[in-house]
Length: 249
Figure 1 (cartoon, rainbow, N blue to C red):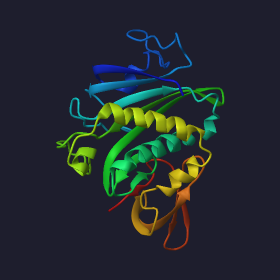
Figure 2: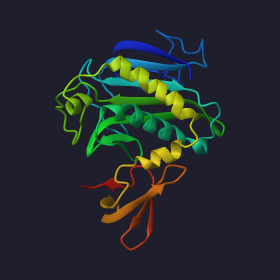
Figure 3: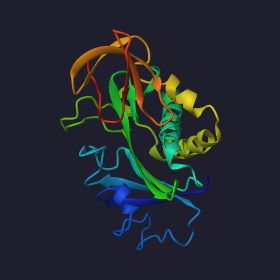
């Protein structure tokens, strides 16, 4: 992929920065993305005033300390029913670029949170625009905790590379390495298997919760369309879409 990186000091949300008010994935001022529509843009902000997580969640990030950025990519007519592959690619690329820094295994908490142990180091928000039955454009928002030493929000379990390592990390080098990893993972036929191999709580029995209450189950996999597959203690297969099940401690 041909990435063009744009640095900005501050915005409310890098995902929103990439989207025009009419809903199309272009930006009419500062950078005109329509002039080179085949390029993949990466917009990096030193600070986001309203960084978005999934749903109504926000993302805490100290100014100039972390990597808060969004990518605009063009999946070349990827079928809409294959869109979970984008989640797999980005999640695996993040794990693989972080793993050399960290002794413990970097894992993916389904569908797309990046964990070290029981702590969250990175979140991903993906928004697709469809054209017919294919994905025309995709905006991928990423918040990666890099050099923040103290978290003050009520988020239950954040962690940063700096906290894990005891020293700061060059954010520009980390971003460059990640973009290279995305390009490699995009071409890899085994990325789905790599995603499943890095799933958080992949082994053993764990407590989950759904609309009917808490239960014990083991994770058996993720379907091609991104549903979580669990087997409970009674041997029943349970299938969940995003937000239909919680990981309990």
